[in-house]
Image 1 (cartoon, rainbow, N blue to C red):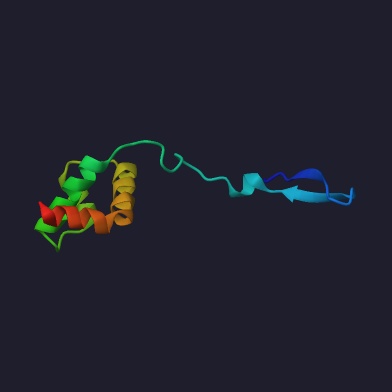
Image 2: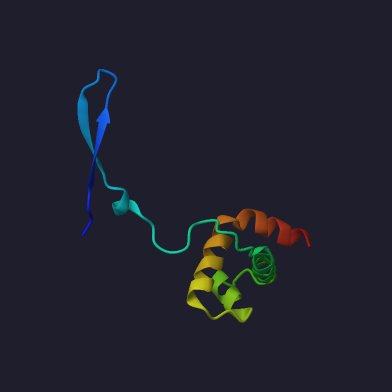
Length: 94
């Protein structure tokens, strides 16, 4: 159950108004974005595999590196998709 806290605010004309704070309703679950894990080497290897075999899918390329943890696969796949253009350019230049 989501609890709402009532905040009292004073506006410019000194009247008291009310505002509902539903911060807990929008809280995200899991690890915060950008929490510092450096996956650049793994992403570069994934991009190299995909450049070598264009029919390969990102998840298959990740699994071919020996990664089996579903949360790690998901994180790498999402990071690859977010940085796909740069990673593909760098992979083709090698």
